Image 1 (tube, rainbow, N blue to C red):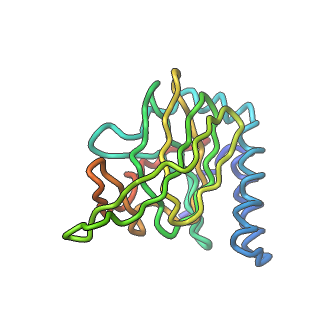
Image 2 (cartoon, one colour):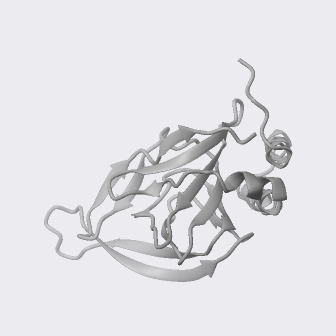
Length: 199
């Protein structure tokens, strides 16, 4: 079945990233290269205009959802969007084995990194001490690379934020961890994927 073509700038990102895979670019270098491709996409006026109609997704206190624009049939990477209301936040989480290239199209977000160490004298072995290791505020056009296993969280500022995300694997196809306030962690399958046309 033939897919619907996306906006030209998104199609260029897909073509360029597919070429990086085909050329055998080493994994870390490939996702650093993708960072530049996503920065170019974020500067596209047609994409910014299209994004104004995207519905709010994110974390509603019970579940997380993302818009899903594209999944590559050969290399498995996916393009998503995450739209948060003012003051919205993610949960503290990792992305399991997936690389995530996260770019802000609109608004600001505070992006926080964490370390997790097993708690001392933890009788059931399932509690962690979560420590903030890095925090920075990002604005439109900035792109964050989240390597596999990196624990993090994003906090939206005073206006709606819109992020475009390139993932090395489609969410829902692998396990990842969510870290809770009581120090426990749970396995999850990632955000609900809501198909959405980027055309």
